Image 1 (cartoon, rainbow, N blue to C red):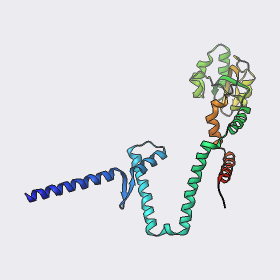
Image 2 (image 1 turned 180 degrees about the horizontal axis):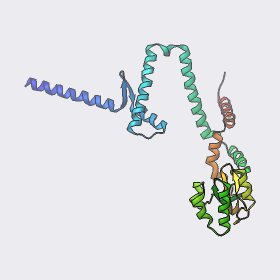
Image 3 (image 1 turned 30 degrees about the horizontal axis):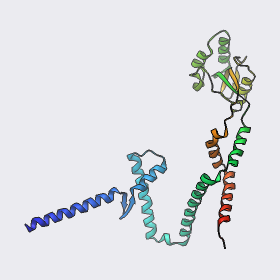
Image 4 (image 1 turned 60 degrees about the horizontal axis):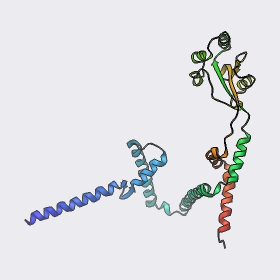
Length: 266
């Protein structure tokens, strides 16, 4: 009877121990020399990498965490982390991350003013305006073929069908050679000059040579370029400003001036 109770107690103790052990490991991605690395750390690493959370990616990320932990432990064993120069470098790295995070937060909440957006919008708008053109073309490798196709079109052949079967520009060929609405400045000069000299519905009298080959050009339509409102392009303007190094430098100085103005410096 006593032996039976002892066996029960041992079984219960083992069950508790195993349950606790399983729970501990369930909360961690890995335990390295007794040091647990939380599962949340693994999840954050995968998320920050932008990769899909697959078993293969998780294993690779887990290896990265193990590598970092082993190096950290070895550095502590060797006393490297007590070296003043190493400590200074670690502090500089820490401050660099903090500075970037503070600046990004300040920019997102206080840094970009309406006046900044208006200035960026006016600059963008000054580069827009004018006319947009909708054209079709057939791009071929040599002048002889271009002239042959042009002759066929002038004789009544279907431009779109010839584009589908002959054009090297596969992106527009599937649409019968039709291009999207474009500003002349976005095209190579030879194509742009020939296109803007045409009137809607007109076919260029001769093939046009560019760096891509020989073009047979037909102008479909012309319209005034639509300029979007500031509200419509606000997200793009914010992205443009935050990627501009001169803007970043000016705003960083502005941020620091605002911090100093509020600080008690003795």
